[in-house]
Length: 230
Length: 230
Image (cartoon, rainbow over all chains, first blue to last red; front, side):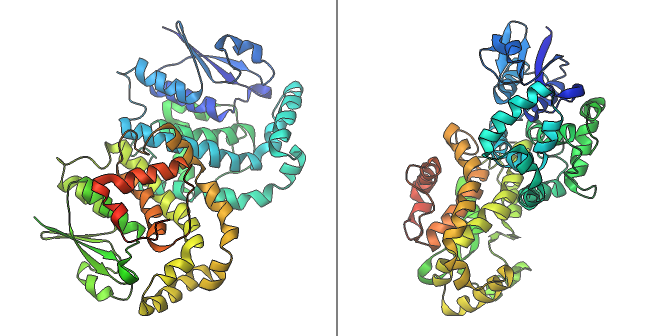
């Protein structure tokens, strides 16, 4: 049965959504290679069939699933014989914490470093949408946020400490091999890499080496994505 | 075989070390009830036999183990037939991230709220030790830190967001039942509760309800500890 994944796209085929990257890596982990349908911010009618407005949306035969967390649970249930994305109930429950940490702390810290670059990476019609929604969210213009970027480095760096300490001791968040908690956090770094030339990690950082291993995984799948190479 | 746990104590039998609480809960989880030997900050000779200077130290028959993370791994290996503290390799690896998050972010945010109370909760000889080591660490006097407490509330509250979001969706960090990742984070709240009257959580907070369930667990074991009841 063929799968289709609807995912966010910016200009020049830059596909940077952190939520879509979690799902893309999870699909590969399960050995699935979906058809990938790009959706711009202002192309919401393309996914109206899913009954909501956000990517990723996975269509697997007769089943339509949206929301990255719902999708990974669907994949684990629908493909129990493919490699596990969690590795047990406790691991899944702890991955939920890591998911909320990425959504609520890591990504909000990152967006303040790359928001100007994300904006520049969008088609003009999407820029208008992005400006309106993000400026309402932050209560500042994109230009003001981008101009204050250097001030946001310290909170971002502080946030990385527990991730770095963990990856100094073990190759992946999930241990000896990557699983969904790794893909959650990797999605955040891939978001930055595919939308911005800003160097989010130094080459000497254990997080950099971990990201590199995930870029190379699945025959270099994520590494081949259109990015700014930072 | 009987176990002995050497654990930190302040004045009037207040036992508040977050690292000791992780281990105490882990021991109960395994069905073990160690003899508990109180050790003050300035009684390091009591644990010199362990070859290092920090509590908790577990003695289990001929085996001596220190460091809370090393102890929990020991318990999981030595008592494989008692309830699991992790629930698989991926869960253990993810718990390591939660351990670093608690050590490196949650507890450092908390200590700024309770440091004056911890100081007041120590015997005079330990106060001198605590003042010297903590003032060197923070580069400020305990009184200056305590005086700035209200400024530290916002960073602390922000840190709790992913924990709260997770506990809105599932009863424990480890899912339907608590395991070691819960005890790690619980240890931080028990540290505050046993050393300070400062209200760290509001009664309407899902984290409060989670803490309450853990205070009641094992026949109210942690709830019976000498505390300020906040």
